Amino acid sequence: MSCEHGNRRISRTEPDGSVVTLVDRYDGNRLNSPNDLVVKSDGTIWFTDPPYGILSDHEGHKAESELGANYVFRFDPETGELRIVGDDFDRPNGLCFSPDESILYVADSGEPRHIRAFDVVDGEHISNGRIFAVVSPGIPDGFRVDTKGNLFTSAWDGIQVYSPEGELLGKVLVPEERTANCSFGGPDKSRLFITADRSLYSIKLNVTGAQTP
Image 1 (cartoon, helix red, strand yellow):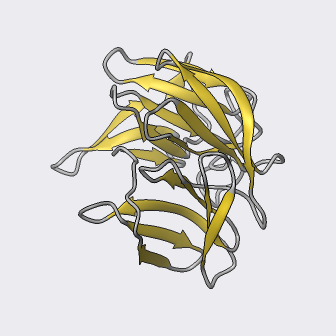
Image 2: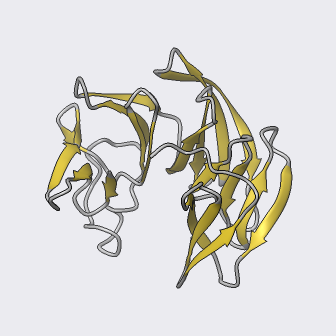
């Protein structure tokens, strides 16, 4: 599955290479520019929809927002229902669940420049939003968690690692101006892949990633 800025949709690429639109509108209005997604164990797709793809022609196509705000959505492929789960963000960006899916983390790369944590209620809603970590230098973008619940987030100096309590445990420094995203991969999900300004990096860790596909 992919978030597409230019086409303003969530899509799925089939084995034969064809691309299918999963969702591109909310209440009849086009999405802004889906940016990041995570698939919950029940098959629902949770994603952020900031305006980066419609601000200019650099990342997408310049256009006015049809929604008038930037939301976090929950999409159920079985029923086709698209629901707003978060509506108080400036520019929601990266997101992921804790290993047991009881907490949803969402980065706001707008003015707050922080990561918030929310309790997941009944597997469908979020509540009790609180600041989990303020990333510095730079802003949080993409992130993932390991099986212990530690959160690995992008920043301008590399990847910063936070405990489930929000304590900064350490950093994986990257020799570029900033990083944008990271993800666990490899046969046992113990290799961290990092996207930076000009390069793709990987590092073997002694922890295992917990993200779902």
